[in-house]
Length: 216
Image (tube, rainbow, N blue to C red; front, side, top):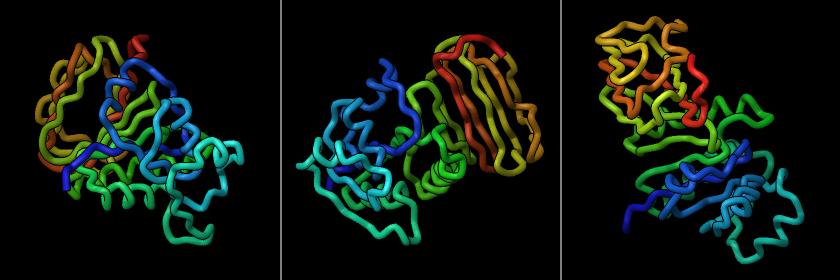
C-alpha cells in the first residue's frame, strides 16, 4: 500500500492561506465530525467522515452525501479526532496534518491534540498541526527543520525537562541548553528565516506563527 499524507479535519479554527494551500497540496483527507465544515472551506472531498456526529450541522450532511460515513456512539472511549487518525492510518497514512486542531472553544481538545502529536511522532509518524495562522510541531530527541518566514514568532514549550536544546537561526539562539520543565525561557522567540532545532533528551512542542511578524 502506498504511503500518503493525510489531513485530519478537526473542529477548531482554520484560516485559508497560501501557505496552508501549499502544505495541503497532494494530501488525502479524513473528516472528524464537525471538522467536515473545513472541507467546504478548502474545496476538498474526504475519503471518509467519522465521529458521533453530535457537532455536525444538517446542512453539512446534505452537502456531502457521497462521502462514506463511519458513525460511532456518543458514549465512546476515544475522541472523534483519535478515531480519525486511526482511520487515516488504516488507509496507509505515512504522515499526518491536523487542520483545525488549534484554538476553538474546547481547550481540552486543543491540548489533547498537542499531546497526540507528540505520541504519534514517537510512533514514527511525521505530524504537524495548523490553524492556517498558527502551527505546532512535536520536538523529540533529534533534529527538525521548520521553514518559517523571517521575523515570525515561535515558542518552544517543554512537556518535560529538555536537555541539549539547540536553536539555530533565531533572534535568541541557544546551544546545548538545559530547559527546566515549566520554564518560560523559550517563549516568544523570533525566526531569522528557516529554523533548525535539535534536542538530546525530552519532549516539547514548537508553536509557530508564520504570519505574525510583530516581533517578540
